Each structure stands twice: as structure tokens, then as C-alpha cells.
Image (cartoon, rainbow, N blue to C red; front, side):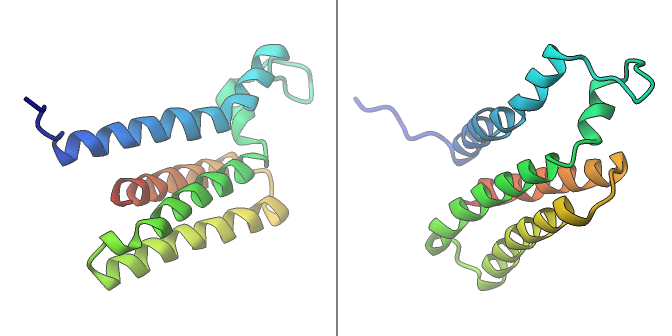
Length: 134
């Protein structure tokens, strides 16, 4: 006797968990390894927190672009399953806009922990929504 198919929410949760561990976590791995090899310090040589050091790196915007690109690709490949045209346009537009904005911020943004935190958090939320729908 075959097992019943998993509930949609269980499948969605599994997909998001896999996405987080295999995309987001591994994308952030260079920052973790960097912090383990050489503990973060400020200009005066005093130790600073990992989070503060992480948020001061502009390379985080490259990670955001990659996360948005992955969500955009997954969403684009599954557009035929999304019935509402408005939902399609909003999701695809959001992922595309995040990719463009994070690429631009890498080039022009000042080193501001608050800007990095807001952009990184917003990218994760939008990408998570796109991945859960895809």
C-alpha cells in the first residue's frame, strides 16, 4: 500500500528548509570561515562582533544578489503553476528588483551596517516567499 502524498505545507516547509541550508547557509559560509580564521577587528585592532563585521562587508550584497537570482529562477520555472497574473508579476518583479538593487548597492552603497541588515533581511523574506510559491 502506497504512502499518502505529503501535505502541501509539509512539502513547502521541507523546500524552504533545504533552500535555507543549501543556498543561504552555504552562500554565507565564506564569511563564517573568514571570521573563524581571523577574528574580526576594528581599525584600532580591538575585537568586534561577528555580526557587526559581517554587516560592514559589501560582499553581502553579492550574496543577496545570488539569493534573489536563485529565487527568481525557481519562480520563473514554475510560473505555469501560479494562476493569478498579478501574483506572477509581483513575485517576479520583486525578485528581479532585488537582484538589480543589490547589484547596484554593491557598487554605490556606503559601508553601513543598517543598510546591509535591511537589504539582507528584505532579500531573505522576498526570496523565501518566492521559493515557497515556486
